[in-house]
Structures are given as structure tokens and as C-alpha cells.
Length: 546
Image (cartoon, rainbow, N blue to C red; front, side, top):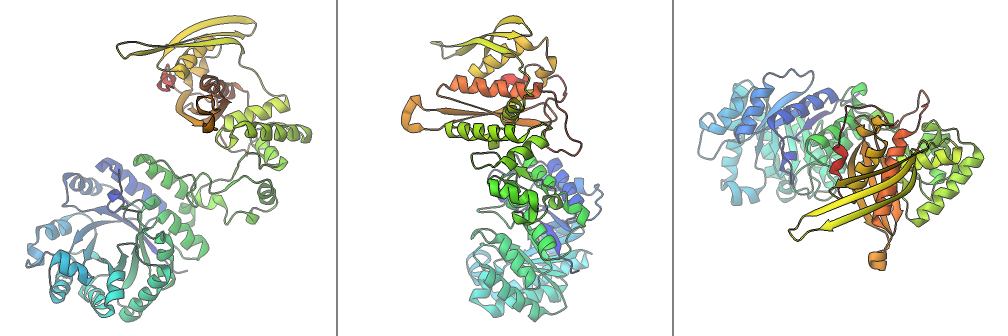
């Protein structure tokens, strides 16, 4: 089985994306996560660029990695300066990183406009820099910047540049589509020509950008043409439209094309790793991302669900477990009875055929009114419980009232009063909050907290409002989605009404009642159980304001 090395440049090229910033300690955690995944090379950045990068290399010197080789990135020597006299090169080779990645110019446009050197001097800069790094005991990867632009303009000189790096001792020359301007056919043709010209002396790699939405396709095309190293970033982070996405490239190479990139057991860490890096970079995971997204193996149409239940290959291109993801059955007006029964089984609910039929009709009727159960698993489970006769009410509402006062000094106060019945007793409670949802939430917990103290552990972590029929103006129907968590599990609930406070109340109550329901999960059932214990949350729910 042919081996393909993955080279991650998230910590250098990926950080050039808008809004990207990580501390040195966070970068170390990402290096460790990529090492666990089985990535061969991790580029840590420029040791000489800033104090944070210098700190990162100092920290990495004490980190033991099982597989990944840390790479220090830098440029070829400056014009008119010997390699050993270039301060940046000296700092580069003095780092603890065993591999040095040198980037040099290839395109005549850059020689004329940027470095302002002759083609001969550029070749000398490449040779001198690679030679110097090699004499200092470093493994060298050479990145031929703008290679494919140069190739289209002048085949001969583009080849001279990579030949020079190979002759000086680079173990790999990586062809860079720096502008992301190339298409797969162009990448394959040029890569094949370079491999033919260089022969067995050196491996060839690919570094693609996504400006034409071809970063992954170009990387795969280069590999099929003979490239044996692929550079990219986790989740495709990077400047402009991003870099080639290693999260998509890895399973495509290993599961679809039969190459060996990481140990098979490590590939199951792919989804976990992608989401972990999203979390550290404060990036919202893309639910539609291939292989690792929440929707990557989600099925909504009734025929699709039925097909997957018979044979998953009918609507899944691979087993989601191979990449650490899982199948999801989405519920909507397009769902069939099989979808409903599947979700009920996963929640440990005994739902017979008649109850499933009733539930399906109820779903379709409510989705027509504006409900959206794909994003509200808690509300959907409560609907199934009601149809199965397994629903337990947390309380009975008598009434609630919300008053918001806007003062002349700019301050705003909201007060909520609720009247509910719990186990035959009437409770009247009033609470203040920073908005109507917050005030209602506080008043409700105040009323039921003594009887059900574990509900204090539930945190309302997100609140979303959508206007469904804006042509009705202020009389439009509003949909409210709440996301809740208890420190172990998370779930979504929904409310729909022309009154935003009523919609919010409905979603709030569903969130708490979901956690209140007794559960008897099948031993092999996945998903969120809800209602688990967590450290006391106190008034953490007060963060939500609306």
C-alpha cells in the first residue's frame, strides 16, 4: 500500500485566515492532537517572526510526539547575503524542529516585482539556503511558491527551480498553487511532468489553496499524478478562501483511493480532532462539512431513511464510524414512519405503529405551522413521549405575566410572575431578569427548585429567534430555538407563536421537561440522554436574555 505523508500547516498558513488567533499553549495542544491523529508533519510557523512563535518552539522542544515531525518554516536567504549570515535563516536552523521548510520564488512576476532579483540569483538563493540547512543537520522540504503560475508561463524555469532545490539536498519539493488559481487537470499535468523530470531523486508534494473551490480536488489530482506529500490545514482554514482541507483529503486518500496516511484506528479520531480545533480557534463547526459535519450522515427524506435502514450504502458513501462520526435521522414533514420509529427506539421509547402514525401526522401539522424539529431534539422527544403515553408533566401552568420597564436613565428591568401547580400545590413566584426569557426562567426555577433541585444544573447556552412570515410585520409568527446543556449532554427545544414571549416560554418549558423525563436507554443507543448530573449551576441560566 503506497504511503502518502500529510503535512499540516494550520498553525502557520491557517492562522492567516480572518479572525484566527491562538496562544502558544493552544498551538501545542493542536500539535498534540494532530500527532494523535497520525499526521506526519506539523508546521509550527516562523521561529523568528514574533515572540509568540519563539515561545511555541521553546515549548515544543519539551513535548514528546509519537509520530509527527515538527517543521520550522522560513524563506530562502536574502539577496546579496550569504545563507550563513542571514539572521532569519540562522534562527530557523537553530530551532529544535528537526525539519526545515524553505519557501522560494518560482514565478518571474515575483522575481521582477517582489524580490527584484535575476533568475540566476534566485536559483543561487534556493541552492545556498537548502545547502545551509542541510549542513546544519536539518531535513529540508522546499516549497516552490506560485509553481503552477510559473509553470503556465515558463515550464523551463519552473523546473530549474525545483531541480536546484533537489540537487542541493531537499528531500521533498512541494509544488504550491499559491493563488488557488489552478484546476485539477492543470495540477495533474504539471505534477506528472515534474515527477518525470526529477525521477527517483526526490519526492514531490502539493500545497493547494481553495480560491477556485478546488483545493481538495487539486490535492487528490496531484497524488494520483504521483505526489507523495500533501500540505493543508484542519477544516480548510487559511487566507482568502482558505487552504486545502486536510479533514476531507485524509479520508478521501485512505478510504477511497487506498493510500496509507494514518493508522486505521487513528482515522476514527478525525471528527473529534476537527471539532477540537474549531473549539480552540473559536470557530463554529460547519454542520455541512464533508465527513465530520453534523449533517454529513444525516437523513431526512422518508425514502432515504428507509433505504439506510435496509442497507446504509444506499445513501451513505462510507460508514460514518470510520471517521468518528455518526448517523442522524432528521425529523421533518419529509419524514416517514421509519424515521419516527428509529428516533423513538434511539430514545428508549416504546412507540407502536399506530402511535408512530399519529406522531408523524402531528409532526407534519406542526412543521406546517413553523416548527423545525431537526434543530429541536428535546421537543421532538417530548412529542413522541406524549403519543406513546410516556410523557410526565413537570408542572401545570395557571398563568404567567411579564413586565418590562424602560427608565429615563436608559436602564431596563424585566419582572416575571408565574402561577403553577406542582404535585397538587399552587406556587406563585416572581423574579427579575435581564430579559423576559431570563426572568421567566428564574421564576420557574424558583418555583420548582425545591422539588427538583437537579434542574438547577441546566444551562441555557443559546437563544435564536427567526421571523417566519415577515410580510405580516410585527404580527408575524416567531420561532424560538433554545440550546441547553447540563455539563454532560446538550439538547435543543423549540417554540412557535405570534407572541415572542409565548414562543420563548414554550421552548423554555420543553428544555426543562426534557431533562425531567425518566429514561431507560437501550444498551447500544447513542445520542444525548439529557438530565444528567453536573456541578451546581446556580443562576448560570441567567445569561440568556431576550
